[in-house]
Image 1: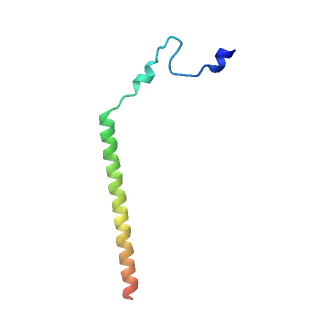
Image 2 (image 1 turned 180 degrees about the vertical axis):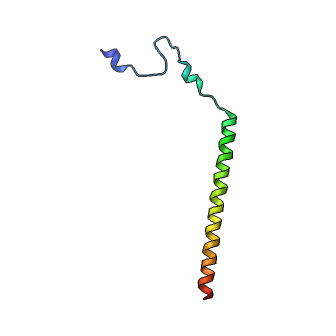
Image 3 (image 1 turned 30 degrees about the vertical axis):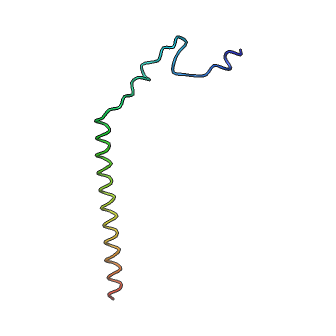
Length: 67
């Protein structure tokens, strides 16, 4: 019973054999480049929306002042 209490779960079995699933995850440069391109597109859209909002705010403020 005491042996079971102190035993912890791990990715290896009793013979120190690691499963192939642990080795499957590799760094893929193409995935990273595609993710960076998508983030850049999203950043451009956000920047355009912020700029458009600032321009609309300035135009609205100018129209209120000019009345």
